[in-house]
Image 1: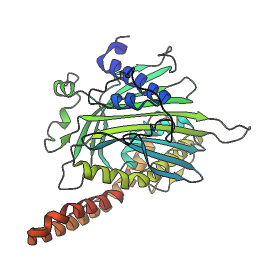
Image 2: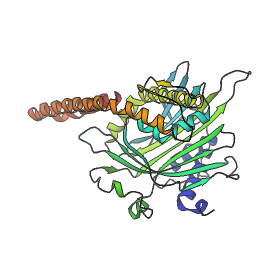
Image 3: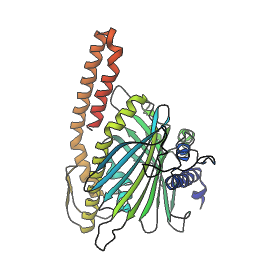
Image 4: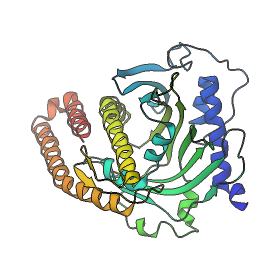
Length: 371
């Protein structure tokens, strides 16, 4: 199969193996190597695996993992850590337990691109570009996974003014076991040379977006597994480990503040969207109508595929359209808030440098945190 030897397939095979090795060993040096710009996968022979808080990934040193959030409810348990990597930016790791859900529920939700266009309000564009680069459904791949699908994606993320929107030319590989009880998702930036060459003709529609800033340094990896209850009838739980780094080419102070402030809100919205995705899928199977409370739409049944049915997509798009006016009002409010701060700064140039940037950061953080 030629798709297995393609450069993209080889890259993601290496990333997948290195990520699983990092999860198993907790070697912070290997994790740092994985998230380097060249996405190195070599583990230094001089490093040692140490244990501590953070699931064995905190080496206890000042440069190791530092816990930044812990939250537990009846339906979810979530812990997040950060570790300095480069350019004053952090690599992040989270461990989440979704009670009453399976790894398959989580994987289907995360890779349902039609549904993401509805619930992920941070992205203004989320497109699948062309047919899968690779789709291996038969046979055993590696030691643990029986299926892998590799897809090209284009994503544009909303960034409040005065900054430009960020665009991502991504490649996503989805790995799953035959049972569906284990799987991984790897998202990496496609090399700039391949994007520029565009041999497949995938990116013509995005050529005119010269005002967008292309992100060249991004990698996210997650692994999910289902843990069954000890007693018959006990609900399962999905245990998810996620690691992530990106350089958006925004000021590191702004980025670190925004991520930390938004983390809990993002968790709540992501869990809500996943539960509603599960509800909608179940409604489709049962051919019953279901109301997606958080998204404010109602849909009926249809056929279940890897993406939502066309009926589900159409119904949810109505909810997205209704929310557009609210987002425009928020944007106007942000512009007024930042403009007023800048105006005062211009009138008071002698003191502006001491307090202007922190206040602008605060305005931007509040806006992003409320989206």
